[in-house]
Image 1 (tube, rainbow, N blue to C red):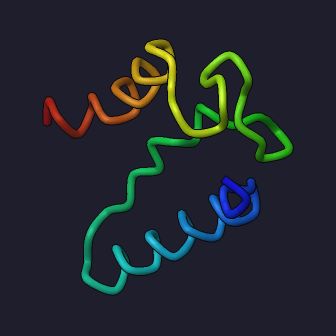
Image 2: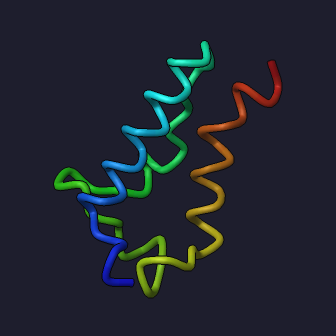
Image 3: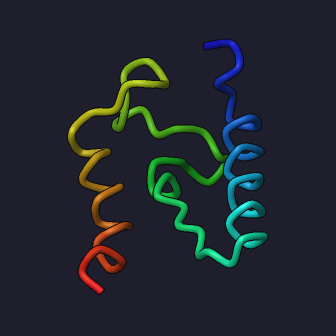
Length: 70
């Protein structure tokens, strides 16, 4: 849990985006709607910083839906 900081999560997403670009893939940041303006996880989406509530999975689904139905 100590490693799951907003900075590390952002760093991880940036690294994944770079890997996707390297191999010619489109990166989908399905976590974007789960964070606030200061890049912290919104409390209404999880109870411990790791495990998501159902409403968070709906946000992830909505961000993926255009790609799944394409």
